[in-house]
Amino acid sequence: MAGTRSSARQAQKSSPNSSQSTAAGSKRKGESTPAPKAKRGRKSNEKQQKTLEETMPDRDEEEALKDVEMSEDAKPEMPSEKIGETNGKTKGEDAAEQKVEESTDRGESKEVEGEQVQEPKPEAINNGDVSKMDGTGKIEPENPTTAPEEKPSLTAEDAVEESSQREKSTPSSILEKGIIYFFFRGRVGIDEPSEVNDIARSYIVLRPLPHGAKLADGPIGDAGTNRVLALPKKVLPASPNDRFMVFVEKANCSMEDIKTTFASSDYATKTAGTRHTPAAAPIGEGIYAITTTGRESHLAYMLTIPSELSEVQSDVGLRERGSFVTSVKNPQYAGPANTNLPQGPDFPQEILDEFRSLRWMPLQPKLLNYENAQFLLIGSGTDPLKKATALAEEDDNKDTDTPLEEMEKLEHEDEIRVEHLKGDDTVFEDLGLSQKEYPKLQTTW
Image 1: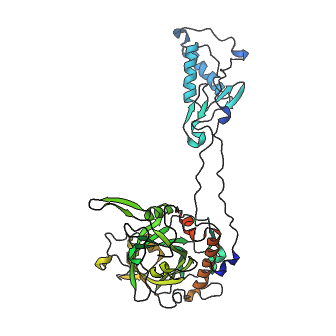
Image 2: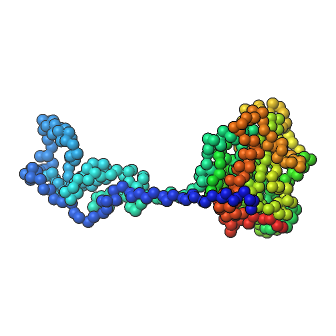
């Protein structure tokens, strides 16, 4: 590993435990104690049971009863009826009325064992879980233990810290910066490619970061803004004479989408039987920047993994530091037959207007947010970062770093982050990939 890792910091992130919460109403768990008898003397001289005709009040009695009910309602926190009181009704009538009250009016106060307790409403129990009643008429939550714990999930803040000072020092000529990964997939039936010809397709994964971000310890969280770029040529352009078409296979995707895209699969054919497509293998990780010099745009990168390039990386065209001139294709014009896609990008009209009837225009990060967008990668010369990191005129002040200085800062932070994680296996940690399901980072054929 490079010597710049000597300033490695201690990993300090830890996943907070999910908060525990007890379902509402759990203190009143089901009891078998029967309802208490009425104790108040004022109702001890209730009228004897009457016939149906005798219980029907005349008009004057109805008005009087209304007045009594209104005066009773005005009393604070006094329920109209208490559990265990008969109010002159038969046992059958009282039980039926009590059952209706318990099933329809659970929000009223009720008296249990001489203590008044406010009955919780069903929707307030267990964060919205369906409630039920036990044998004593009390409300019990469907899950009386604890509320379901939230599964821990990675967020964009796991290893990413936004800094106002970094925002000011980052030059505007850096249109976007982030973490970059390189993968390739072997041909059908070839799990371990032994040469470039065994590769079916190569991929670039871009994970953009905020403009003023700096890296701390930990894996990069899933912000759902990842992009998967496909390289049908399998290798990266090595010189200005190499011009290879690339297209956006997945835009604004999650880590789960990446796992699905890079996973192995089997399918049946009529002639050859079951065929096996191997999982994609990682071959590099680092930082990147999309920069502009005014007339041109560039995709520049610095590798962190592997610490030393081997034959696989060299054969695919990876360097420790590299860059490409980039131009986006206008989908309104047809391209070469071997580069056309069945469907073009769904650019809105305002983006199409920016082409101004031109066939190509410099790459802007927003154009990578559309699947099937096509753009050229043109190789660089002997000094790959010289043109890509040239300082624009508007950034020519003392408070602004050059694009190269900002990239070197980010690359140094990534080195420390990788050293504190799992070294070359950091790719799996970052993307949430299982090392049992995907090949290890490949450096030799």
